Image (tube, rainbow, N blue to C red):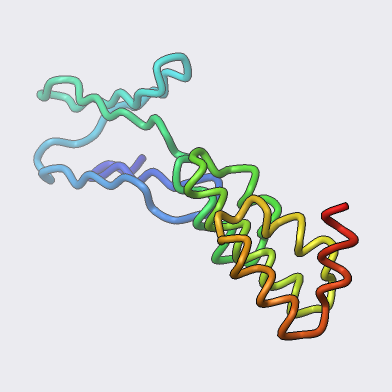
Length: 136
């Protein structure tokens, strides 16, 4: 909180998630965070109370962790099956590239990629045996 604005920074990404600049004649006098309702309350000397809802700070956290190449944490923050499949496919491809074929197979299963696509990938690299062993 500053006298002329409020700036909210995400604890996860350290990026600005909310900013409100006030008229210089209306100095900000106080601020409170209601943790139960996830609301930010602020007031000026001659102004009504301003209310900002801060819910869902972590709803895009998976993208931040993915960008930081922290894929396991990104998977933990995924909220939808579509998000989990997307991150799983990226992780599976990274594991496959590094030669960790068994673990890659595990993540390919939850990636949403077709069975044929995954099989072709293993067969093209002569790693079909690793895939078969994992599936058994």
